[in-house]
Length: 220
Image (cartoon, rainbow, N blue to C red; front, side, top):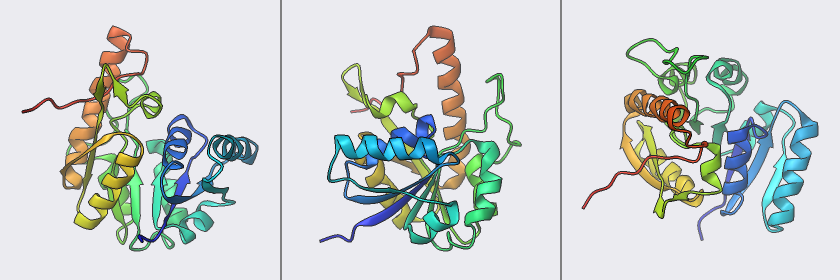
């Protein structure tokens, strides 16, 4: 039997963090949830356990503590917060999978704030040189986690990274969350993935998709 992996979700009470936590609680994982506001974290843990009594889930006091026990660390925080969080978990994230979900969006959604030729995920890899940074969940909205099948089609979720074993591990996470995982390439492909979500946000605002929209590759 496969060993149960422990996943730390840092930023668990945000829209994406709570959606990811709820969806992964259905899988064979132990979840450690971390957020800045404990008063928001306890109700989330209670809500998940109420819906799934078998969920192995608990609140963590600090990012380092959560990361220390975890096999996989999900940074469910905005791009602007990744630098600070990376400093706190750098030591405990050594040789571990760290998932970057952030999109470095400008305040007006007219572009990305990262420099040309890089991405949020690549910048995180620089901050965590001894970790296996994987880009995932950035091309999905929080609403998609409760409705991963849109218009009769399962939404695709793209993954990018430099470590093949880590990519497959994260692909399993993505499938547990209800999406069709597609390994898109190495970490540099994150630049494309982050631009894809920028475009989806722009189209959503233009055509009023109500945040329930996703990417789907149609092929034969």
